[in-house]
Image (cartoon, rainbow, N blue to C red; front, side):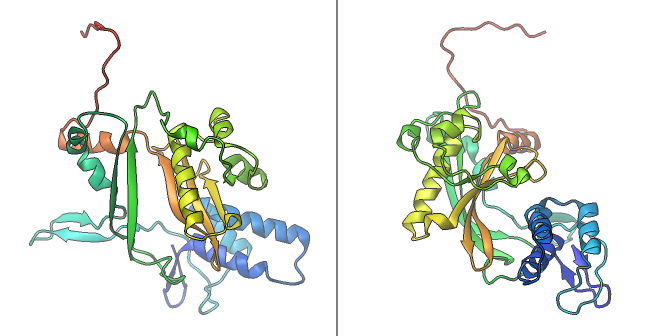
Length: 295
C-alpha cells in the first residue's frame, strides 16, 4: 500500500502502477523501446517487492491519481478483515478470505463418508471477505463477494486422473512462467497430454480441471480468444504450491483472473492437524506386507 503524501488516501501499489502503465501506453508519441519497457513493468508489477515498487514509482514519477500529489513509500497491508472474538475482545479472529478451509477442516468426516477412498473431492460456495485498499472496477475488486471452490484430494504418489483421456488431446492457451519471463506469448499448439509429459503442467489432475474450466467458460459464451491460463511465476507462487495456473478472461478492465488452479500439496491439512492435534490423513492399502522397525 502507498498513500497520498498530503491527504493520506490509500492506494494499492501494484494496481496503481498497472493503471499508470495502461494510461501511458495510450500516448501516440510513445517510442517502441519505451512501449516495451512499460509493457514489461505492467506484466511484472504484481511480483514486485517493496523496494521494486518504490523504485518503479519514483523512476516513472507516478503520482496519486486523484490529486497528482506525491506518494509515500510502500508498506505491507493485511488484506484479511480483523475481528474480535468474545465479549472481552482479547481474542483476535479474521473473516475468511476463501471458503476452502471449511473443506480441509472437515476432511476426516468427508473421507469417512467416502468410505476412505481416494481420490475424493469436496465443493463449497459461500461468501469471502478481502479488506481491499481501494475497491473499484465495478464488482471485480470488492470487500465482500461470493466464491466457489473445489478441493480434489489425490494420492501424492499418483496424481493421475481416471478421466484425463477425455481431455488429453485438448489444446488450451497456456501462458507459462518461462514464456512470461522471456517475453514470449501464449502457447497455443500443445496438447494437455504433451504439456503434462513435458512438465509444463505439473500433473494430470491439474490439467484435467483446467480443461473443465475452459469448457465451462466457453459454454458460458466467452470467446476462446478471450481466455488464457497464466502460470504463476516463482515470486508469486505460494510457498506451499508446486504449480498454479490462473484462468484469465479479457474484459474492458484488461485480463482478469476468474479461477485459480493450484496443486496445494498437503499444506492445509498438515497445519490444521498440528493445531487441532487430529490426524487428517488417508490410508493406502499396500500390495504386499511391509515390516518397518522404529527405534
